[in-house]
Amino acid sequence: MSTKRLTSRQNRTIKHFIKVIERPEKYAPHGDMLEGEIVVEGPRPLGMALERGAKVRSVLVTEDFLKDDRHKEIVEALLQKEVSVNVVDRALMKEVSDTKTPQGIIALCRVRAYSLLDIKKPGFIVVSDGVHDPGNMGTMLRVSDAAGVRYFIALKGSVSPYNPKAVRSSAGSLFNINTVLSKREDFIKWCEEQGIPIVITDADAKESIYEFPPTGREVFVFGNETTGVSREIRSHASKVLKIPIYGKAESLNVATSAAILIYEMVRKIKSNLSR
Amino acid sequence: MSTKRLTSRQNRTIKHFIKVIERPEKYAPHGDMLEGEIVVEGPRPLGMALERGAKVRSVLVTEDFLKDDRHKEIVEALLQKEVSVNVVDRALMKEVSDTKTPQGIIALCRVRAYSLLDIKKPGFIVVSDGVHDPGNMGTMLRVSDAAGVRYFIALKGSVSPYNPKAVRSSAGSLFNINTVLSKREDFIKWCEEQGIPIVITDADAKESIYEFPPTGREVFVFGNETTGVSREIRSHASKVLKIPIYGKAESLNVATSAAILIYEMVRKIKSNLSR
Image (tube, rainbow over all chains, first blue to last red):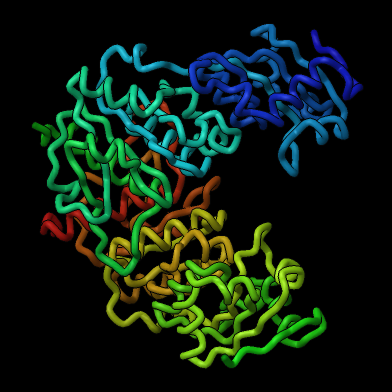
């Protein structure tokens, strides 16, 4: 087996892992830097990343992990792809990992974000305009993927879709969906040029998601957990929809709202209730 | 202003707060103990609890919090309800609080759970059968409340709906909805006696949530994040439904599934598409 043993925290590979874990926002795609690196931790997320063709550059793994029969498949897949597999002891793994209970394997993956210009055939698009919580971001990526959404646009000011917690919450969907990074003003201009209507949600809207007939060629924008959709996007929205509240709750969490709206739009599109 | 100043960690009130924070599962309603105490932290959650008539027993607050004009309303509401308001310094607050950045106010509230016998008119009921993550539990409480669900049943083996993180994620909805605690076998017996069909979700089901016409008198059961709905409940289910996946995601998070299913059922019930 072509593995290497690393023992020192001073080793170049180890130091690189630590750098990427400590400052994920610097190494992940961001702004105009569309290519970048992220760390994927644990056998399940990594297995999903591999299945979806993620480019794994190198891996840190413990002896225990390698010995465990349950991980045979993933280890073989890595070796077959000629990934550099580095064996470390548990103490060193613990030092590198950012989780309380390291799961025995950490991988450095190359990922590529898209720009607006890369969007070939705009369809049903989901947009984050300032979503702040990485758990919400990951959940939105996952539900968008489940609904068959092809492009997910994260506007500047949103938490990075490549944030380690967002990657975990997305349960592999980050690797399935095309993630687009854009500035707010470029996005607005792009929607105008393409003739794509901007649809936002607001608890005070008059029209409900159940009344709206989607064409299947809209952008659905979800805003910040506290302040909602930004003023700029709001002033360019061609439709404001609400999710009706029948009980005493004041509002819904943004990821929950996204799930309900996205599935309702897809239901209509699939059953030809759209325009 | 009838406030008291507490300075010692040895004070009885302080010690009681610490006990409830350290072992919430002991003091919150659980098993057959339907009355209990929980700690609510931060002005927003506490404001919501107060609005919904929660019984606040006593409060710890910092001087800074009291002085802040933004908190005038909540402080007045507490004094009006003759809650014992205890002023502590920031160091002591930090020692008591279970969050990294204490928000200046912590309250001890009396809460009451319900038993199956307390359910007067069963309608659309949501059930947790082993949901493990408190964030998911809180999100499920919130979306159930938003959809106008009156009873939420947490079966034994689920994380407590009174878990501090669940209370935070529910954003006040824990105080709006009637939370029922029950054992699995009692619940199954109750459904049989009441003639209430048990509906579960499963990614491998043949029928989708879009094909199913609800009567508005069902229990919708959501299972554990990893293992799904338990064998016992599964063997008594009269209907197994799936949420269709159109993309590459393997599955949906349980709280997301609950949101999509609950809102789809309510949509049908409200628009008389039900049986």
